[in-house]
Amino acid sequence: MALLKKTVVMVGMMGAGKTAVGTALARALGVPFVDSDEEIERAANRSIAEIFERDGEPFFREKESQVLSRLLRGKPCVLSTGGGAFMAEPNRRMIHEQGVSVWLKADLEVLWQRVRHKSTRPLLRTPRPRETLQTLLAAREPVYALADLVVESALDCSVEQMAARVQQALATRPDVLGDRE
Ligand SMILES: Nc1ncnc2c1ncn2[C@@H]1O[C@H](COP(=O)(O)OP(=O)(O)O)[C@@H](O)[C@H]1O
Ligand SMILES: O=C(O)C1=C[C@@H](OP(=O)(O)O)[C@@H](O)[C@H](O)C1
Ligand SMILES: [Mg+2]
Image (cartoon, rainbow, N blue to C red; front, side, top):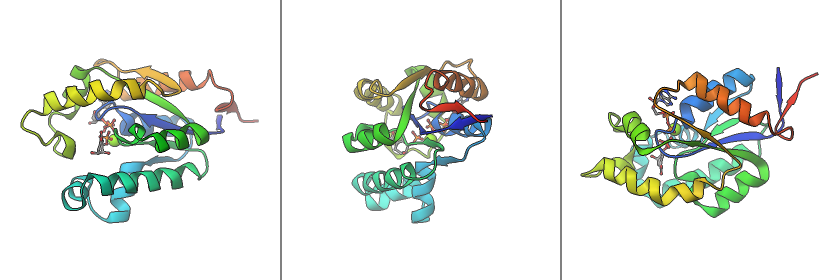
């Protein structure tokens, strides 16, 4: 059984699999899983889409930073963020100081196939959502590249396979993952 010394923070685009792979990774490691979007929704008692609609994106980003700060101060766990969380420099600093970031990297086609039938992501409620996703991806990739570890996703790679790949990447970091006695 593994011993987690630092919180593993999943970052990357919408549809990269942060929530799904983070859940599987936490199960495999035997540690708690938290998702910043779910925490925000629970505290507000509203969906992310409703929060964007009623309170606007700046309000959501403020809540996101607060939730990240709180969760990073807790016991080591797997923490999946929303796709925009890593864009803010103060968030990146907190994550870097208190956890280890893992970028789930995926290309446009993979991301699009995973998000196209869902209406839960307010940033993609545009006349041409695929193009919006492409523009966001181009703007964000250089920032995700600042993450501590990168794990690439492909269309034929299952959630469990991705979690195993992340675990392999973490095994190269004895400051993050150790052996329990
Ligand atoms: N490696 C994968 N293989 C197959 N389906 C996946 C994979 N990763 C994610 N998915 C699916 O894609 C969708 C988006 O994944 P999700 O975890 O919500 O992404 P994110 O949290 O990064 O936006 C979900 O339906 C999820 O089950
Ligand atoms: O990319 C983004 O800015 C967002 C991604 C979403 O999370 P997922 O990446 O889990 O879909 C959610 O936080 C919100 O809709 C904004
Ligand atoms: Mg998610």
